[in-house]
Amino acid sequence: MEELINVVDWSRAQFALTAIYHWLFVPLTLGLGIIVAIMETIYLRTKSEKWLATTKFWMTIFGVNFAIGVATGIILEFEFGTNWSNYSWFVGDIFGAPLAVEGILAFFMESTFIAVMFFGWKKVSPKFHLAATWLTAIGASLSALWILVANAWMQYPTGCEFNPATMRNEMTSFAAVALSPMAMSKFFHTVLSAWALGGVFVCGVCGWMLLKKRNYDHCQRSLKVGAWVGVVGIVLTMITGDTSAVTVAKYQPMKLAAMEGLYKGNHEQAIVAFGILNPSKQAFDDQDPYLFDISIPYGLSFLATHDFKAFVPGIEDIINGVTYDNEGNEISTVSYAERMERGRQLQEMMAQYGAAMKGGNTLIQDSLKTAINADFKHFGYAYLDKPEEAIPNVPLTFYTFHFMVTVGGYLLLFLLLALLFAYKPDILNKAKWSKWWYILSIITIPLTYLCSASGWIVAEVGRQPWTIQDLMPNKVAISDLSAGYVQVTFWIFAVVFTALLIADIGIICKQISKKSQTDLDTVND
Amino acid sequence: MSCNPDNNQGFWSRVFHLYYDGFRSMTVGKTLWLIIAIKLFIFFVIIKLLFFPNFLNSKCSTEQEKSEYVRHQLVTDD
Image (cartoon, rainbow over the protein chains, first blue to last red):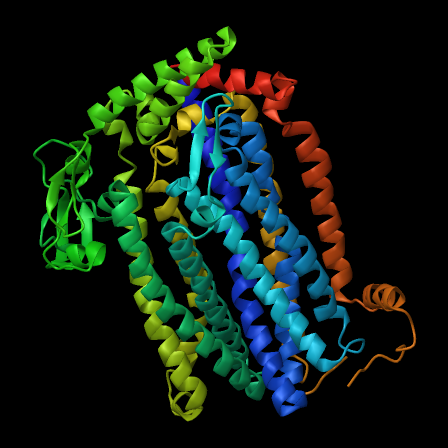
């Protein structure tokens, strides 16, 4: 058992490492892609060489990040086939279909139009070039869509039916998978947060240039676009974050409870604005979950259901099968103990199905298939040794969620001020503290990356122990490998991805430094 | 308006020159392509071939065997 836990932990650690590194490259591509497309649109409308120079500057940065980041996501697919083979088989074509669409889009759309974007300035018409730039940006977002659809299915499996003959889930509705509420809220929240990150990146780079007193006009042009995209991005991220919270409350109530460190729910439930968790708190003991907290009355009820009076279940309620109905009333459903029992019955039925297949008894197979699918939502609970095993890491989920929300609030303020200074630069120019604003702009870049990574940690740690929500826990999803084998590849990835990150940051900084010393009001090539 | 001086060329010829001239005139792009080539070599040749075989393919040769293997894993293992 200890070996199994080690393999699970190392496989999870490896996936987390590669996913987080991959995500360091992706949001800048998504955000900067839109910003570059808007800049080029302005250039085409104004025919100003200054806007062309500014567009080309940011396009170079976009290109470096795109080139270093490209294919880093493919590693995750390697891991599925090797480390998570039971999962890969079990999900069947549901995971494969969105990833195939993503591969086609990424390969054909991005690789075609990005070539026109970089090589086509003097080869195609300006309008066609602009179209290629927009299609590269849109293509990147569409690639993200299919990855997020696949991820959302793991959080909320829908549009499928389990086939006990093949032991795979089979897609019954592509639309239900692609347009599930979880997929939609995840897509918009993620992509729009990347716009905010792109905006912050532009503000930070311009902050550095202004600190160095280089290319003032170029920075003013860049800031106007960057701050606008950033403000729109962060406001829409907050709105879609609200939608995400409602979706999580409905389909993953345990995650919401962990995000808030809520063990016993209530009507008119307050939300913790700031809190320090009691580290010794366990479910079903009598200890206070918080050592210190500042709460907003009614906040969590409203966040989860848009109803100030609604019941929000805590961790202990969820384990006991207590939840809420559409009117926000407290209701009792199936407890985790009962779900474990039903899951074990399903396991037995699957074994019987296998025997019936070998015996060629189709009548029994049909009746077992109907029975298995009727109760399938409890299947994963068969593998829990006790109900408390279904509780995610509460401190990590709680703190990363609160960090993300706090930094998100700060980013709104920061980007609004950046927008103000972009249109009223004299405020900054006359201020004695302008230097500190520029430094703050630079510091805000890594802070935004941490915020973005925190969002993913909340989403992924908060749904533990499930690889597929309610259907497959991690300990069953992994392959029968040794922990040592996974450790070796973990360290290989750690080295390779760290080298790529250093190269990315190094080349981007070198390009910014080099180009900022040239006149960015004129086109140099 | 077209900036292309070779409008009389065929479509595929223009596509070829887009890439050919693009690659020739690259500056920072050359370093990036070197990084991409090294990265893809490490990913697909070293990591994929040596460390990431398809686990089920290494255990089973047919789809039926894979189903039975996973059934065994999910139904009988603790």
